[in-house]
Amino acid sequence: MSKDILKLDGPVFGVAVDQGSGLEAAIKDARGSAAQDDDLLHFKRIVVETLSPDATTLLVDASYGRELLPLYNANCTKMLAFEADVYKISDEDRITALPSNLEVSDFPDLGAQILKFFLYYGPNDAAELNQRKFDLVADIGKRCRDNGVTFLFEPIVYDRAIPDGTSAEFAKIKPDLVRAATQDFAGPEFGVDILKVEIPVNFNFVEGTGTPQMSRTDAERAFVDAAAAAGDVPLLYLSAGVTFEQFRDALAFSRSAGVNPLGFMCGRAIWSDAIGIFGADGPAAMERWMQVTGRGRLARLKEAIA
Image (cartoon, rainbow, N blue to C red; front, side, top):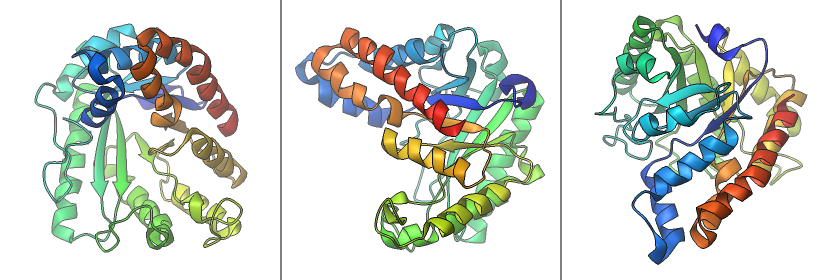
């Protein structure tokens, strides 16, 4: 399924604009008194229309998918998130809330070839909690198989003992967490066709790019080990809110380390600066910026991972 849809003989250059309430709040703040009820949809529509011609695939959310999917360029594979809102987690166990307006069986009729599901995952959490997460992912994988939909799964790692994911302390254990999550969900019982994974190191703590807590050699090894944990399941790297320059450099580093990922999925690193432009100067100005700077950023990410 995924080989036919994503043409795995070549790299995947993916764009994500599935953010919900958090993006809506940022746009509302940027627009101020000029804010409109449909600003979030308008913003997403501009991203889809300007970037889908250059993207291999583009991800939108369940809330606006029905309005946005028809706007894709014909050559861009349609990916739809199977989540209520990536910013709304159902409880302290960090289990993603499923959408109330969408079923996996709806995907074929919507023309969405790929389902993306995101879940916070703590490899060191209690076995009972992680079994619940395993069961959820396996169930979604089965539903994807039953409906002929490609399943892209995105585990985001955490550790309850170190709540600050940007800290030097967390940076020390992040490679092991990403490797463990990748290995756990690459198992055939989950039916995952593609893993969308985090960059396994925090470059703010790598020799040559930040505080030299980790050597470049160790960083390269972390990339190789985390990628190897996926076995035969293809990997896409996600930008996870870093800057464009940081993500570009991380993709290039992965290739220099000898890793051959399927490609990347990138959201805010491409279009986050457009929020301020949308707010200050309106949709037309944002569209001009996206046509030049947004598309240019996507092109440079392609070059970085080639």
